[in-house]
Structure formats: structure tokens, C-alpha cells
Image (cartoon, rainbow, N blue to C red; front, top):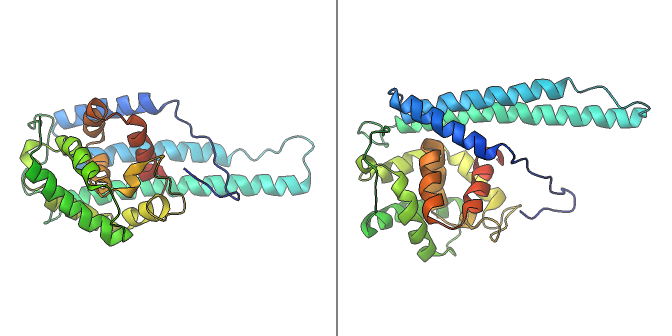
Length: 258
């Protein structure tokens, strides 16, 4: 991700990412096996994550002891930095829960799927037909272009990616998935706008070479699947697309970069 001289890049902490993803997948599987709906599962996991962020907030807020011998000027800067960090952590915790609620609400929208929500017992999809890929891509293009004004994406790449990503949609939901995607975009319009304005075409932090998904319409589908079945998406992506870091970076943008 490119940055301006005034805002130097900070190192990302990724030590616990793999273990966290594995734990999230197991908890999600347990809850779905117990009968919880996907939106409900995501909301519960989001509340847990928000609680962890609030724990970090409380610890950071207590870190007000200045290094020995610090000047008054340094002390003011130190306290200002602590306040900035704790304010950001509060925002992240609140946003995590709000986003989960919006996703749950979208899944209940009249525009969304009317059939029962996918469970662990839902039929997996081994292959997605060209017609379905084209239908979903047309919907994703409408959403993407309406928010970015960009039409200079790689449509062949979009079809290639969607052929894989749509395997993360259960067989029961394939026919009505376009409506579900449109309901998701309507409920998450502000999030999508922020994502593309920061990392998409012409965005402040755009870097197509680092994460091409932010410049492609299928990114809308990836966002929706990240909110609903993130582990299923990661499974099909990592099995068939030789670009694991792309999905990892995009996931960070969508969850924490807005």
C-alpha cells in the first residue's frame, strides 16, 4: 500500500492471524452445527472480537506513565498519542458490532434469500456454470461502477475469480444469490464507498499491484462472502487461487482499514 510522506506506513501485526482464523472457523462450525444462522454466527463472533478490542483499549488507556526524565512537551505528545490510539480502538470495536448487525439485517431483507440460511449441512458446490458467473458479475459490475465510476477493470480476471469465489455460495443459495448480493450492497453502501475511496481506483492508498481486488468488481462478492462465510471463502480461494496474500490484504482492508 502506497503512503504519503506525511503518513509513513506502520508494520502490520500478523503473528496471530492464522491461529485466529482457525479458531474462528472452528467456532463458526460449532455454532452452525448447533443450528445458528450465518448472520447470527457472524454477529456473535463480532461481539467477541469487539470485546477483545475493548480489552486492548482499556490496557492502552492505562499506559499514561511517562518515561523517566520526559519533558513537558514530550508528555503532552505522549498523552495525545494515547488518546488517539484509544479513540481509534473505540471506533473499531463499535464498528465491528455495527457491521455484523448490518450483515445480519441484510440476510433478513426481502431482497435477500428467501430460502433457509445455509448451514454446515448445505450442499457444497463443486463447479459454477458460466451463466451464473455472468449473472453475478453483471450485478457486481453495477454495484462497483456506481461507487467508483471505474470501468477499466479486467473482465476476464473477474470471471476467473468468480468461478472460484462462487463455490463459497451453497447450492441452495445460488439461484437467489444476486438478490442477496444486492441486499448486502444496499445495507453496506457506506462501507463499500469507504473501501473504494481509500484503496480503489484513484483512492488515497491505492496500489493495484499490492491488492488487485480493490480495482475489480468481484471485490463486492468477496466482501459479502467475507462477512457471511469467511472460512468457506478462504478454503476455496486458497485451494484454487495462487494469491493467498491478496485475500489476506483485502480482508484487512475490509475489516480494519475503513
